[in-house]
Image 1 (tube, rainbow, N blue to C red):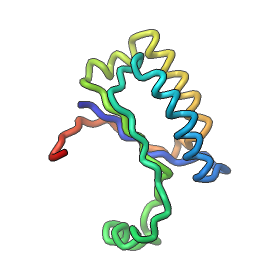
Image 2 (image 1 turned 45 degrees about the vertical axis):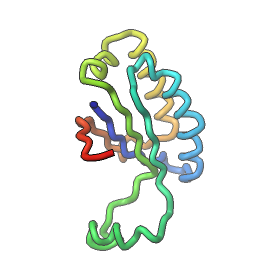
Image 3 (image 1 turned 135 degrees about the vertical axis):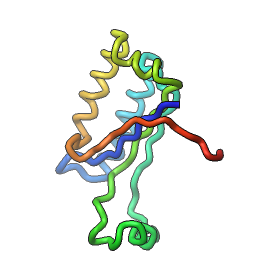
Image 4 (image 1 turned 180 degrees about the vertical axis):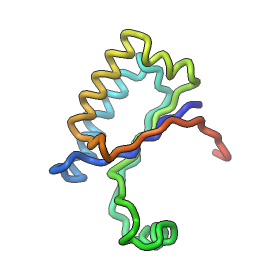
Length: 127
């Protein structure tokens, strides 16, 4: 499995609630609509919350909460069966059009300059 992990930061002036609502209720269905054209096997949204109970865990891995990097507003994860399926998203006309539509929609709620993404090969340890 090939996987994209996309750490999302909302656009300035948008609350986390507004961001997550748009992402879940507008963008999510748009991704689902284009899943076949883009050959996406699975799409998951991880919505960040304000969980004070997690502060000690975060602090143990980042020194102190004051030094810790800003928390993302969410993480999107998408899976493709293989590299050929992922590569097809840049060559097939229907996939190219779908990708453009998704990118235009993302520009409405994601601060691209603070939202890194990367591709990797998933290695399942258990589950």
